[in-house]
Length: 422
Image (cartoon, rainbow, N blue to C red; front, side):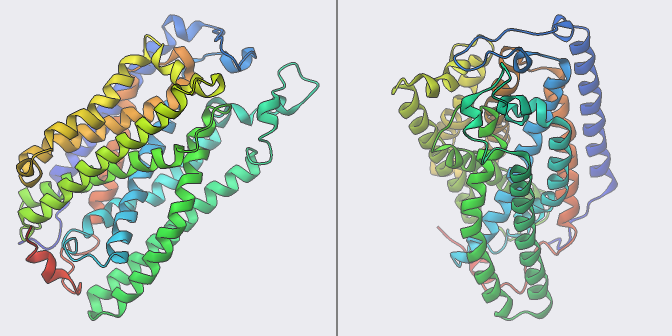
């Protein structure tokens, strides 16, 4: 059994090709935008119940670039912190079955630091184009573009407080991740149960803090794009999408490592449990999705239903609305329903990438209509930016796999993981 992951030149070359391919597609996409009719439009009037100022409706090609940058920043950062959350709940619940696979979500967590830096940079560049509430004229009662609804949210939605929350969330998450890494490395070196007990305490505190900060981060980074709209279930909804994506990635990485001679001790029962997580939380995501949709759409209150009207009654966004449901519920529900499908890797190796792409579409639908209205698109640019981020994301987490042995030999519950049987 291989104990240390070999991040060899062949893997690095493939990631470089993925990056360069994504960069090329992004450049082609930007070129198409600049030379299209959209690129030359001075403004596009979007008529809805809330927006009447021409400045917010104005479309420029770079807004689509900014929208894609923000989608990818939020999506991959969410997967990273959710993987850390996975590690934490294993310690809080004192789980033994997962002891042999914890190095995989730990490596995914390595993206948290570069992802946080990218988020701050992208926000600094794009804030006025992504977040309508950042425009000062909205709060000036003498300006014809004054918005009394947004002005009423000024105490919460203002740049200093927003940036303070962002820095706090990213900082506190990384602080706990660093603590977890520190004590896991100590456990590898010294053995015993002292580090394991400390990790239980650290993880308990982190889970409580994460439960609050994740929801508020979802309000800030995604919900506030549609400034007039609100949903009391939105924090749960974003959590579910991030969480299922992280579970799918963890499962896919464990299977891929096992197929390449690593983690050979991982048996079908561990794979089965991972498959059950992916299946169960795909259903959980659907429960949250349907509950939010049912309560809002059928209550038929205009300031709430506008969110779904923009997606359901749009010729462009409606197909994505359907694809979102198909990839994130119908496909995993029927494909992973049987016991066998969750135990054998060939099923999960098909399901997990589909689910990951499905939740990327989910975030695309959360962000794009609010930023671009009917000027949204999905083509070379969207695929290219995704490939660029994916290559960087994979490079960081595969590098992270080399930092620690793949087997936690001194974990007090490793034997339970080795002999896990269901």
